[in-house]
Image (cartoon, rainbow, N blue to C red; front, side, top):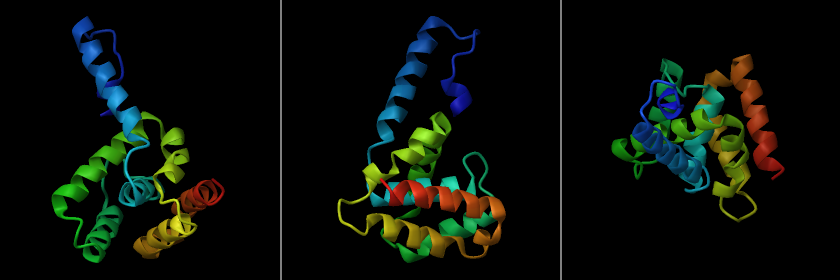
Amino acid sequence: MLAALQFPASRRPDEHATLAAARGEIWTMMRIGGFDEALVRSLIFVLDFEADCDEQALRALRRLQGRRPDLDAARLSRMVHEQAAVLRLDRTIAIESLPALLPDDDDGAERLLESIGSLLRGAARDRDVAQRFQQLARIVSFA
């Protein structure tokens, strides 16, 4: 989707307006949502599956859906697509805006990190996954 949101020279002027509107919607989506959106965005970030959902990511998403029967397949799929688009647009801002999605209570960041940790299971042994999890923890814990 990111490639479609960039402005290659071959695009017609009317396509530029459509693409600019799509980019604007995604920028707005960065700060819209709640705990569920933060959880899905964090999971995508930590497992790094913005483009391709590998077996490790599928297992984590299945665990999430198993624990959250209120997250039906259609809603979860929509959130994965939306949050992946947000991350592709600007990964840094998307991650740094996560605290805005968490509840105002004192344990929102802790619940998010515990949820991600439990969904990761064996994936957390991967060095890159562990580094991204630590980066996530720093961002949401000190916001």
